[in-house]
Length: 333
Image (cartoon, rainbow, N blue to C red):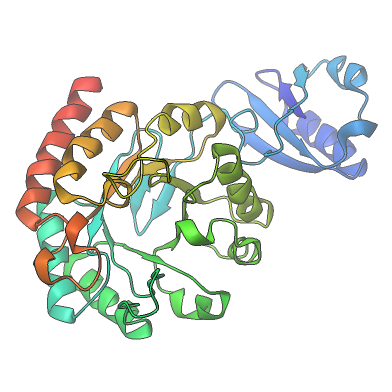
């Protein structure tokens, strides 16, 4: 349930209403906008007399929220969320380019790529230290050493780090990471999501291979309901009957999520297509669809990459794409 207060309500009257609602055993999520304040009521709202609340002189309207996700619902938070990571703002018009290799392989590799993508306009750096691989024989990342190499690249370039967490037990190693990524395979690892509710840093939550938008939002709800509201959603392609691309990029998810939630929306065309030459057109389409940012795999030597070289752009290809993305953003502004 949401309670919309009238414009200009005094702080004292607002506090009195909130205290009364809390006395009914409800948690109150407060969203103060420029022209109105929205109180999101979380809990058993069956005890709330809607007619009584609506009759109060400070209340504009009362509505029931039928969707199971509450805290990530745009009805609870009408204004788009701005997430800040390492001084970089994401969302509500602040567009970001996140770029870097699928996996960290060496200091020379990650520093070289980080410098190249920054020069091209990237605002955050991605790189996998812990890698979930379908085959147990594939390169699974440098783990703790990889995190240290990412920090070296950050020191060299100033780019905040985005990297994937797979296991709760590794969480202490991520204390100095700017954005924690939760990959598609862990989207419904609910114990992990609850744990991230106690982390004071942004979370990039990727959609699962065969998950609906509602399931993605419910996973975001796990993190937010546990205390961390700095969540970003990532559309990275879903599995369909297509046999020519790695996955199918669901770009309709961008405007649909925009209606449903206030959280920033990032698109990953690299994992969606699995083919480097398809990444630029899908990145441009995602930009035109209204995404808040892109996450692009870039490698200085894709042919010899230890992970996902086929979908990785070369630095010069990323630079050309970044120019086109800026042109598209200017065209739709």
